[in-house]
Image (cartoon, rainbow, N blue to C red; front, side, top):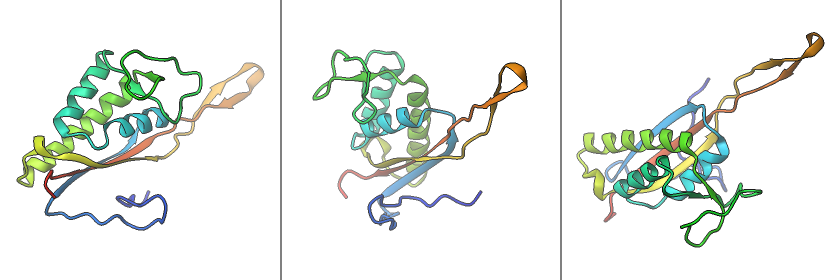
Length: 162
């Protein structure tokens, strides 16, 4: 498998300009989580400060705060406490993996000499990863395909003032 391009603009397909002097980035490949849940969690944390996003996702893991589901909202129940939205869920598995990614990006920021708690999540995107083929046995010697989707997530933290 070839290297995944980092930070492509969805509309034009060109690379996003990132300044390595003011940013720290992290990427994780082929997570076994729901692509829909990953998209909604990433949308919820984009623009937040790193510490704020960490506490938010920890609250989701404890099922105290719901993630608003804005795109994949069909037949999703209303949740208490959501602001400016009505439907939401508690995607625990996706939140745990994205929390690990935030902590990795935070470590990269510390390594580069930044103060990670003052940085914001400037860019976070999900992409479709490799599909893992599988099959489920059926009656009379038949089988049905049961494939597993994977997700690739990229994140860029940017200093507050820049």
